[in-house]
Image (cartoon, rainbow, N blue to C red):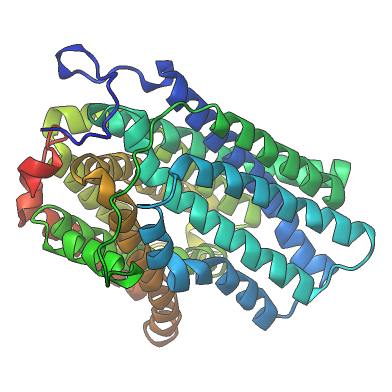
Length: 433
């Protein structure tokens, strides 16, 4: 029997329909997309402020980076548990309004010449906490908006727009920063974020009230229950272990990629940007074909294809004998091709991974299941980034990238040797438990 919170507009014959035709998802997708563009645009201005206005030291820059992730590490499990008891749609609306006010405060601080390290650090923490609440609400809310057999397509649509925003946003942000200046740019992002709150408020869903806690039970019990469910589930356990392993590998290669390309291979900055653009194109195409792969091969094999494919680009960068003397054409071709396959693999596996775990978890545990996986991922990413610096210093860039490729292979191996390989998107929480 399906979870009671599953929407009633499932398509005939169990076939997923185009999710953008569902009004509630159209509002959800539109709000998410414009927020992604706004964040990508203002992200450029944020970096410029830190470097050129505040003249931040390397230590201060690293502190800003850590402040953006810290809420996930310290509050992720708590917020995830709250999302199984709070109204998720209302949380999205409130956090969007809060983010709009926080972004507008940067404009005010700039105009009154009061922006400094501490004031911007406070805004960064506030934004980080609000983004944590928004992320923790949006993932468990999605299964209430679309039928569960359409979750892969819904995540693919979100992935496509996110990729486009991540590609076009920084370039647009740089142009608008020169044209409008930082105060107007942050104010514009605040307005965009406020408009996203309006779109989120138009989502029409029914959110059932959670069962009251029994005497003596508190939020710690809720968190423990979510962790037990995630790591004892015969499908979610290997999925979680695989994605944790993937995050370790990705933190290693992504941490040293820029310095490897710019310093070791000697590519100019514009060429580095071109390689990232190829990665974005690959990500868009991967998200485009992800639903078809998942429907034809099943969720498990769809995840495996993405996990296995990602080994190829990083292994090639580790073993192909190229250096700064190879010529820019050869270097740009190889590195761009590697980034394209990297993006393609992520587009394929992300929609199938996220869609499957949203489909099989009961509604009452969606927030805790997602927050458990996401919080551990963030902790592993931080540790992996530190490990990457140590490995690169001791072993060099190529061997470090090779180690990342081996860890990526281990993530794929977990899928193929576990029951997860048999997973299908038609699974329910009852049949997969």
